[in-house]
Length: 484
Ligand code: CS2
Figure 1 (cartoon, protein in one colour):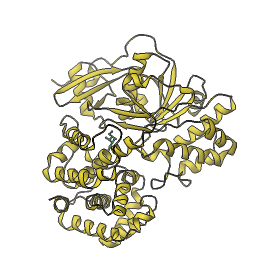
Figure 2: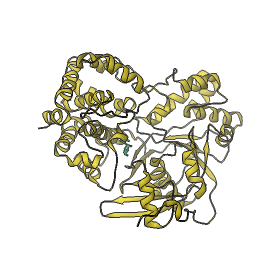
Figure 3: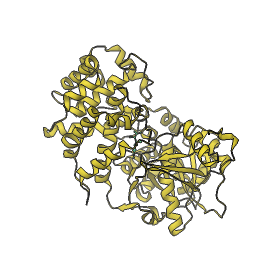
Figure 4: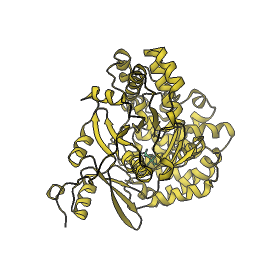
């Protein structure tokens, strides 16, 4: 029997005292709530501490409006191949919508009890140039924040203003803990914050440079967006209406550089977080092996007519292709992290992708390709070209992205392309109907393609050939050519 979610009682939080607020989190998407939120909850269960979380949405009130009537508690549903288990997570205590109440957020950032700011604002939320990692000074929100540093709009703008308030109050800075899928993410966010701070007040930038801490992290758990159907099914099964549940796979991993201001942090290790001195080898492995093949399956899977990752890897042509990517093109580019067998790691990834209970849409992963491709595909590709290794598969993935951006699928239906650069990309694509001209135009996008890669001999020609094959024969044929 299906119930209307609203006809059963609303989820309530477990009773009991709540810890003090120690963490402000920017970006309250499903990923945070199914990963970082659960680790923080478990760390407090193990070892205590005042690490309650206040979530921040920069603009949109929807998550706050869903969570507030249930006191910000939510259900985490673990979807294993053999069935599901649920738990109630009670770690978020409030949500601030920054656009509605900027003063409250800035006051909280300047509160002595607040010690860590975590972020999952997605790749585009850092207002950086994807190809270089530097601050994008022409980004409209950065232009705004430079003109109005006391009333910021962007995540970096809030970090800088919050740090300025703490400095003025004689407080130590908060640790900035980024949890987005970007290489050297700690160094990237540090660079963006320092550059913005320097443009506003060089003395502030000096203080942040000396006192601030920006540990890098590698996060991993597959958490598709929650659908209305998921909400209804959960209400039917449990008899309780949760407007904001998260559905996730059993696997999780979090590697964190143990470098916090005053060593102040939850007892992450007690929750299974790997506290390491250098997260780089873990990050490279995960970004290239997981996110790289995710994007490959997103574009080539979508073009092949597959709705989800599980469907895409059930297609033997695509399954062979991603195994080829791993063995011939991605793994040879990596240094294995200590005690990790990369062949076993990629086999485990394949098994994770086949989990039929996880409906992770290719369309969802295809979003924001201009922000994702540089670290997921292009870095590996460029290294392979320099080293003389196979790069045909990765080249085809870039071609598939260009094909996807064109906005029409192989049946002639429109594609709903979501990307902060979508308009520009579409215009480039339409102005250059010929594959060779299109490739030349795209390779000129310095925000996406580093000059060295764009200038590598034969790359433009190989890319144009791959695009022409996709256009003439379709994704299945193009993929089978690379991995027969
Ligand atoms: C995905 C990631 O949406 C995407 O782009 O590749 O969200 C991926 O599911 C996570 O990084 C897994 O840890």
